[in-house]
Length: 153
Image (cartoon, rainbow, N blue to C red; front, side, top):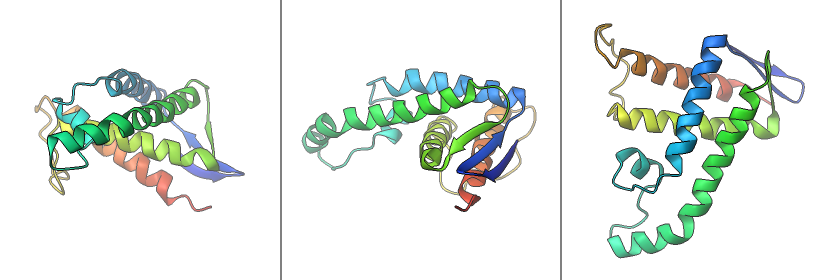
């Protein structure tokens, strides 16, 4: 993967395998983000309670969550549309934030599934651990997100 500033935005060059994995993650996320199962820890992490009381939180969620879900779906749909183009992905400067939000949502979801908390991630995961690929993926998403953040406009 290579991230470079371009005229009017960012050029992102992914390896074919990276593109395929990111497409699958986005597709899974788009299906998942529309789930209203608040008992799912990853859904709860993406749509946290705004208040301590259940009644207040439910009322706040009723009015704010549909727009937030729509924004997450729109960001991930934009990322998907960029990934469908072969070759170098050109991200307009105005759309970099959509990528950053979308990648962050993927990391939050994966981190919740892996039960990553705070600075817990960062150690070596044994290769025979069945989650080693997911931890590598979590780290790769962080690297992608960091690379996009480092581009200065």
